[in-house]
Image (tube, rainbow, N blue to C red; front, side):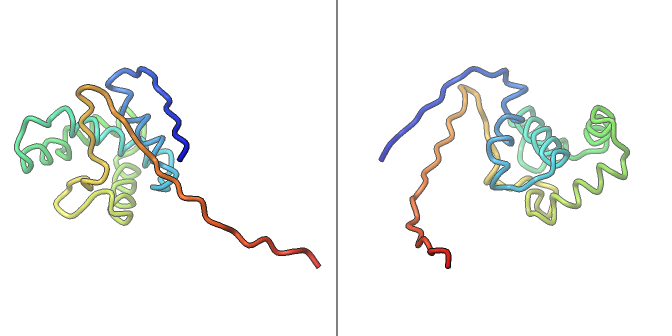
Length: 127
């Protein structure tokens, strides 16, 4: 199996945005959804030292929400619609927590590995 490694440096506050950018072909998020998820991941990381219920309350509290939609320059209605869409996609789970599949804690960096299998395709001849 052939292996490729790409290594680069990124500022911690940008790593979540880059991570979602790499994962998005699988997640199928809109640009705004991806931006919200990356910001939520950043808040999750920021509050990682708190207990789970306290952390998630802080991530999704009114102040955090307001700061997020104002910095994104969107209305509260647009922001709430994005959250609803993320719930439908099971990115935000009941109880306002992010799916554990996406949580990252890049204290010393982040490594993402993809394993791709080649599928044999049957080529049909044109008639």
